[in-house]
Amino acid sequence: MEQSRFSSPILWSSLAAQVLVILVTLGVIDTGLSEAITGLVTSLLQLLVAFGVLNNPTSKSSF
Image 1 (spheres, rainbow, N blue to C red):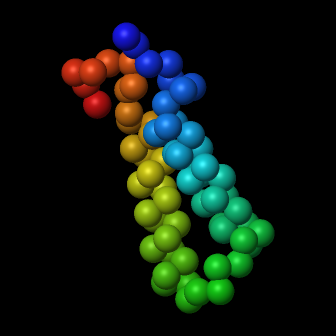
Image 2: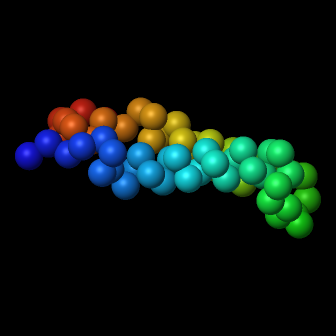
């Protein structure tokens, strides 16, 4: 059974991570942390986005 891309939890988590990155970058969400920690959090969220872009939920044999 093939899974739809839109029902994949990885797609939705990467979309949420991208929205959070945009909001943190624009200053809508103030983390209250130093610039270095904010940069680290943003980088980790971007890794989640990259994982969601590279993921292929319709194939069991490939990433």
